[in-house]
Amino acid sequence: MRKTPLSKLYVLGPLGLIANDGRSLTPRGKKAQGLLALLALAPRGQRTRVWLRDKLWSESDEKKSSSSLRQTVFEIKKDLGEFADYILQIDRHSIGLKLNNLWIDLHAVKENLDVCGELGVTPETELLEGCDVADEEFEQWLSMERQIWADIADEIPEKAIRPGQVTSRGERGNLPAVSDKGELLSPIYSLGFLPNIQHGCDEYTQHVADYVLEGVAKNLKEFQPIQIFDFRDSTEHSSNLTNACETEYFVRVRAMQVQRQITLTLFLYKTSQMSLEWSQTIQMGVDELLSQDFPVLAGFISQNVDRLAKSVFEDRPFQNDPAVAARRAGYTALNLMFKLDETALLNSCDLLETAHQKSPSSIYPALQSYVTSFLTGENLGELKSDAAIQTREIVKSTLEGNPFNSIALACLSHVMGYVFRDHDLAHELIERAIKLNDSQAFVWDHLALHKIYTGDFEAAYEAARKAVYIGAYSPISYSYDTTLSMAATMVGKHGEAIVAGQNALGKQPRFAAAMRYLIANLGHAGRFEEAQEIYSKLLKVDPDFADRQVQQERFRLTDTFAEDLVLKGISEAES
Image (spheres, rainbow, N blue to C red):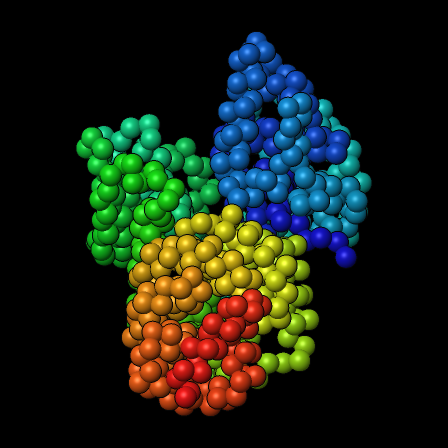
């Protein structure tokens, strides 16, 4: 089966690079677009650096043209973001495109002229329309390539030409989204990024405002598809800002540095009233900001994401509108799961199914698979016999399709490790997730869980502490408290484990995982009456837990020492 391309590159008509989730990745600079065009039309998608310099900077000397090429490649990688490593192949001598991960319209047309109809391509379609690179060598190359295309276009059969048909390209935001059945789809939520305000920032801190904004965007989009209109760059092409006037909220970051202290403030504005909804501020030392050991900046990003999610996804007057519910399905479904109610769990599954049919996204099937962990660990419903096969299929399609969502990867890692005990695959998935986004509390939490299940307790404890700090304001923060309780248990910090477990149950009294570990730690601490009280509450939620084999199934620990540790604590409460 052919691998699904991660993005589509259009060279017939205006140049456009579109991710498979609809985002425009088209480079903004003219030289950057020219470089991409040169690679797209190259044999095997690859050219030497010398050849590229000659076509884009023919009048510059070698030193200057080499520097210009490096800068242009940097600009392209910045525009591509997380897609860069999957699209570009770069070494000391050449630059190329990874054609296995990229669909190119011209290549598709050359293979089969009959696709011209669905692409809206006619003999009049111009190759690289509007591509304007101020270099004589490039213009000569483009003129020759257009002649070659004209010969191909003359062969397009009449049956493949459908007048009035419009190609579906991500930058055509003014066209309504329509499903395969012809149903009008609800537009996704959107945010506009305003230019940053910076005072006194030096070479070490001038990037921080952008880092915060981009971190907020990345984290939000992993929970729920959301469109970002970036007004920070005044050179942004107008074609990339279509429908920006419909943006519901604007976000801006202010960074003010005085000597070695910096103050960061994120502002949220509602466009309908052009008023400030709220602002969030943090002050810290520059050394603390730049430290890798203390995730203060990740915590600030996460705090703003949780508050933004509430403003954008939750605070709505039309809560019962199914179309609106589908638009925020990822965020809503995850919160429904953590209500620990079988009805809420079923509702979350239905919501995800509907949303995925209307607007496919890697997060929806991953969250549907994540439900199995609640069936196993929280005794909610029954686990289907073919769930493992279905989950592996979801893992495969996620990795082949769009492996850039750290929450999707963390969900699938947890299911494969905790539910199906495939810890090797779970390790691969969670490692990918943490490399993609180390400011996502959900990912750190599931890294900690994976380390617990595989016996690496010190690493689990450190990851859990980060998750609790970063996700302090999350609506599912009690889950992070529970993981910290679990990890602290394993490293012998029973007092800290008890406090974390009590914090979790204070927020979600029905969370069986928190009860299990709190009972075990109270037993080890000799607080038997308290342990027995929690044990009685747990049996009301999970009556099968009195059975020793069920206890082992609920904890699902591969390390014998760890299993003996928690079961001994449980025994103290039972006696």
